[in-house]
Length: 485
Image 1 (tube, rainbow, N blue to C red):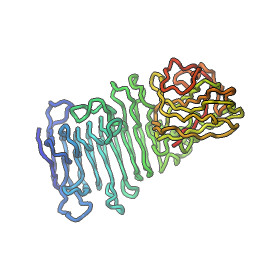
Image 2 (image 1 turned 180 degrees about the vertical axis):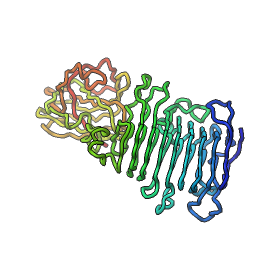
Image 3 (image 1 turned 60 degrees about the vertical axis):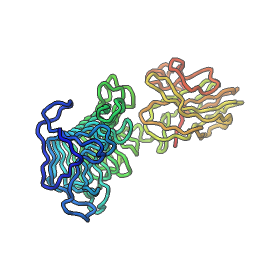
Image 4 (image 1 turned 30 degrees about the vertical axis):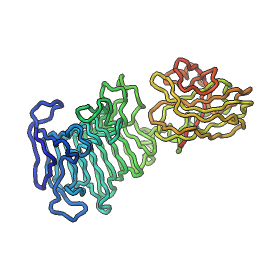
């Protein structure tokens, strides 16, 4: 084991070890570790004498056959950072190569790239870093030429990289801000494992990282991704996230093939079903292992739309999310019996803050009601329900026929994608209950099959904070309710 404060690699230097990595502490390997208390990037580069450039060239150089390990408890620093000693971003020159490396346990990313022209990374394993396995960001120091040009990553593996959050973030590869007129990215054989960050690598033994395999944020460049595999460790109960997550206002020209994500492990029941590719802004995804994404998922050719876009969601609300699709709402006469809490279940497809709920009355109005309230419950794996949002009592609700009613929740709450919820409507003290827009054609016993679509809680005088699954009675009643920011 070799220790140091910080390595500054000059141009034309090959920093190389011997042997290869094992997960344990033993094994024939060149292992280097930063000294305690440094809290800075572990390996950086000389500026080649470019003391005034805001984006100096670095290299060419090579770093190979090393395990680069952080000191447990360090508070800052990447494993390898493409910068020079005074903090300026460095642009790696042609023939710069990083290969056969392990980067483990750093507070930042295993490798943080801020410039490459071109850059090649091959056979790299990133384990339990605080941000990402490999993070590539064009900070737009040079908006005319860009700082990241041709980028090739092959045979990259990542486990438990946290994404800069306490739990449930991170990815093996993160691409951010790459510019359309310069960057071209090739990703080949990317392995990702959503798993716990160990205590010995600055984790707490329970928080998990590598939620996605690849995150592409605000990139307008062409990207080809081939052979991306994303799983969660078999012993976990949480499902992995999406294999490729696209976010930010700019979209890549993305070609993907042989992309897979495991979502059927018997022990992993927590979380929604992941996609191979998911566009976070449009809240739309593809479960196809092969596909093309243009400037947005809307730009698919017709045959691609048929096979790669969930066409059942193309008419979803642009703002917010509803319990039922507007196209399948077939009845404006769904009757609410006074004193019964009616629950309509759905799985959230968007993560967003919710402040309002909208329902629509039918032809029959509520008469002499003393309580009219709407609730949102979070549903756990046992189908038990916990109240997360509720409106104040408004006895005038649904007192006019064929009217859309918008109502604010007493407190806003965050609806999370992949989580199961139930919207509850309750009228109490009324001599006549209202009819509501929704549907009630399904047999009540069929609606009660998992995942439950609807339920009822007779004898309700107000909204309970918690509801046990066994107390929910079957019903055919499903109501249309839209939850909006």
